Amino acid sequence: MIQVKDLHKHFGKHEVLKGINLHVKSGEKVVVIGPSGSGKSTLIRCMNHLEKPTSGTVIIDGVDITHPKAPINKVRQDIAMVFQEFNLYPHKTVLENLTLAPIKVQKIDRKAAEASGMKYLERVGLAEKASAHPAQLSGGQKQRVAIARALNMHPNIILFDEPTSALDPEMIQEVLDVMIGLSQENITMVVVTHEMGFAKQVADRVIFMDNGEIVEEGTPQHFFQSPEHDRTKLFLSKILRSN
Amino acid sequence: MGPFAWFKWEALFADLPQFFRGFGYTFLLSVAALALALVLGIIFGLLCEVQFAPFRAISRVYVEFFQNTPLLIQVFFLYNGLPLIFGLKLSVTTIGIIGVGLYHGAYITEVVRAGIGSVSRGQLEAGLSQGFTYTQVMLEIILPQAVRVMLPPLTNQAVNLIKNTSVVAIISGADIMFTAKSWSGWNQYYGPAFVAAGILYFVICFPLAKLATHLENKVHGGAVNG
Image (cartoon, rainbow over all chains, first blue to last red; front, top):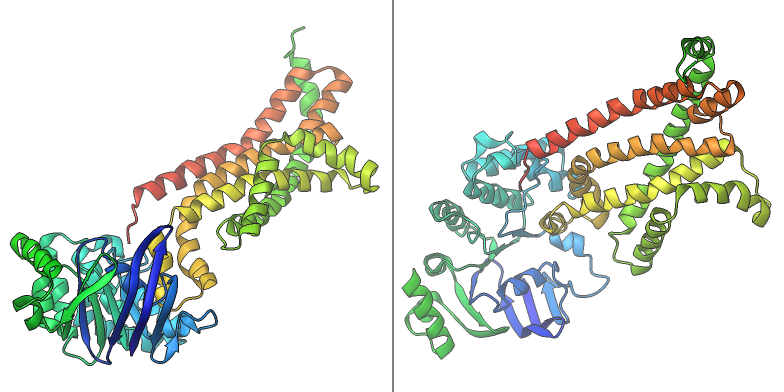
């Protein structure tokens, strides 16, 4: 499904990713954690080529998207992304946010795109906001719309790039609840987050990154109860204390 | 017998049709030059945003050249220089349209560039992540948002452009300014002539300036946030 091989990324002289190898299986829920600056966001952004790797390959469903001739726009239709800052289209209504890409990119009939859009809005509990504009929504509502927008592309994979980090604390749970609901399905999820409770509950595998490397990975049980590496222990002790 | 003596105004009223013809000429010249300036501004403004560095460089050179030399010299060059150097003799109207259009195209380039720059990078990324091509992202997502920001300064540019069409008077274009100049040069009634000319410019420019203020309030009133 997603294969990352020896991925390196430099920003100028700074090496953000130092040879990442990762294989995410179809339907797997992978949670990536780590301190800020560890390269986890860069890694997930390489998975849909928003970030261009310096070297290495990223293969999505058999297509090497690092190849210059890769049909990247086609691949991206299958691999949706939910951003930290929501990035809804402010000049469109909520429902139009959901239908724009299906209609213009996937060439789906407007009626059908709107019908499935309404279905997903209902699912995230925001059907009554269909004709509102993003500016009229709270942060939590915006992110739920962003998730519905991702779902309305009917992707095989959804990437979440710190989806709750820009939210006020009281709005985090409503977004996590939607994501937990989603995890019951056969959709592949890669989630960069600081929400350890979510990781414990949802992840098939937790990946800990630090300083551009994958330091440790394993099941949530292994990860939270018997981490092997000192860096992992240090990080967990800090983050669990602050939680 | 002051500069604004009544009989001079009577002479002006008698010849008002001449001034209205000048007004019409200025109006048409402005519309044509504005159309050219908009086309150039959009093209060069978009070129500022592309990956390919030479295109960005071309756009910069265009903007810096036309913003940092006087319009008057540019028009002189088109009128006197082109025939001498290239044997190319353009009509006064064509020179007016091209001269003013090129000059304001450079300013509109900056307006377009700033408008696109005002849309957050996250919008581009959201669009790309959904499988839109770069061009589609521009047309469907970035430009519709940028236009809201661009409209007030664009309207100001239109006002400046209209006033700047008065340079064609120097090369005998039959606009408001030239009409005032030649009419008063012939009868020495400078006072009423230039007051009338000023009023005619004001009549076109003032509503536009009001529109710009109105648009500005609208943009800043409805804060937009993704």
